[in-house]
Amino acid sequence: MYPELKQFNQISKDYEERIKEANDRWKILHKQKEMASSEYESLLGQYGRRNSRVSMEALHESKDEYLRLLAKERDAMEHLDELKETRRDRMKDFVNTLHQARDREVDAATRTMKKKVEEMQRLKAEYLMIVQQIHQIHQYVNEIEESTLKAFQTMDSRYQQRTDYSIYPALARMEISHHEIQQVFTAGKLPSELTKYTDPYSSIHLSRKK
Image (cartoon, rainbow, N blue to C red; front, side, top):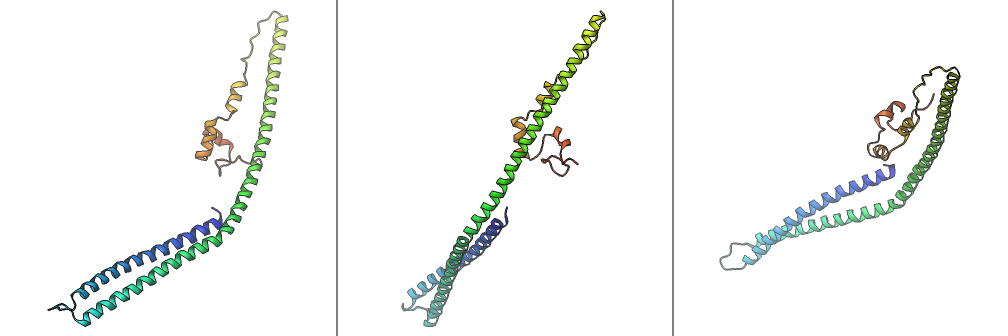
């Protein structure tokens, strides 16, 4: 994760936590205000009735408590709305920075990827050149066998030909299968039989020649 995105996510996380705290506080105050409102309405309904035990003082205290909680609830809601608006403005201001940083990271990664593709082309050329050399050596081995056999035939001698060494099984093992490509993509490591050719500090990159 690049620095700007990390900072963006951290800022967003901080605002989410603050907004959640503010929303939780508003919920508590809203519940307390509703209870105070119900109590005030109940006292108000009882006040003035015959034989009512609700005094003017109790009624005023209940009303004051309701108004106090109502004001605190409004303040909490205003604070919550302010946090949401501030987060929206802050994130909006950060968008251009995030876009620029993303383009920078993508461009850099793309350049590296293109270099790696060129490196693969070079390795492919080296691979095919080695294949050609192996083929030429194999042809030379066959020529040795054929010329030696002819020499023995001129002497009517029995010639025990060496077991022919076919290059095709070895070349077949050099082909990269779809399974091996998927293993590198998903597991991030080479097939076990190839790890001896790699850098001990990396399961992917080939070791550098010294």
